Length: 544
Figure (cartoon, rainbow, N blue to C red):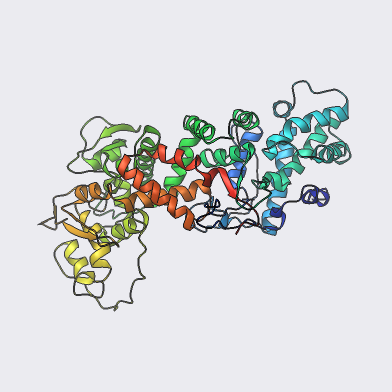
């Protein structure tokens, strides 16, 4: 830690408001040119972004070999990249300090890793070599060209390397110290947007700022060398250029992983891997089956995003991916093994994500289906409809009835204290899924009685959906503007990395209507987001 007291002063070398956590900018008013929401100019890298950025900055396969002690990001909000949760405490700073030292030591202990980040024609003379290294490596670390004075400042650090690491070659010692300094700079730890405007209004982000917005939205990491080149040659200065580049990024495997993460967080898919069921009723249940359900959901959702599907298909598609365990639960015949294979499910029993095993199993008890939790989930996460707090119920209530639906209705249906919420919002959706037991297996009877899955759901607008079962409900939800808006709202929050504001909700409403009317693919919606002003501009400092 002895050498970090002066490295921390690099905040002074290139001061930015991020050094003290300040977020600047104003809010545009309807009717003028500032019609996009305010955004943070200095979002900090999340821990996962830091790891993936270090991986790509040093051309590593992964960062598993580097032991780091980063302070965990707080579990606030729905998405892990939301700027509101990314505080910067003393503990965070110490973690990033230690991590920078560990990374620098790891890289400079390998001639091959040092060579990968050094210019191929590095001069022999020490000062010239240091200058060449900084000119080559520092712009990638900062994700932009060097600014006035930065080269000389880091060259001075480079030349002090030998005094800190006397047992190392002067060049490698200098590189090690420069790497430590760069990885602790706010220009590495934050995604800095320096573009300015002489007047209030919208500021067009420069190519390097747009490149970073794109790369962290699609890859959760820094721009590639090719994306840096596009930023440099002006390819990202136009709406068409940004759209064209974003379209190519769908071909990168990191994009699939990024949108897997979006769906895991949006729909709480990670909970599928930690489920318990009654060993008496379900003797073949193993926790590994829950992990398989998670993988099935990820593959299904990813196939729709990357394969051209829309929000409608998320709720109506019969395509899925199964192994032997899942095939048995779906009642599929054939020879299945441990590998996942694509299948078509029975369209009379399955329709989209609400009828997939993972969702149904997660929203069930140890022994029974759970209409209440299934209905709550759909309201909150597919319709984005807030629900009131549960009233204080008497402790001595006893459900009555022969079926699960009858027992739930006896406590929360018409004529009970749950009549105003459960009976009209939660229960109807939950009852539509009563054809599926606690493992998501399809059934025609429950407790010796025919399953009754018909009901009516009423939107906040007063519009009603009448349906016979989950297939009918899913088809109607798939054509609902409210459902399309809910998915797009979450997608926009994830792509922008912040809470949405009034101006954003206008964009959500526009895209939702277009999604319903034009049958937009999710891929197209993403492209429209990144080519929009909300993604390519920010509000000028002082605009109000």
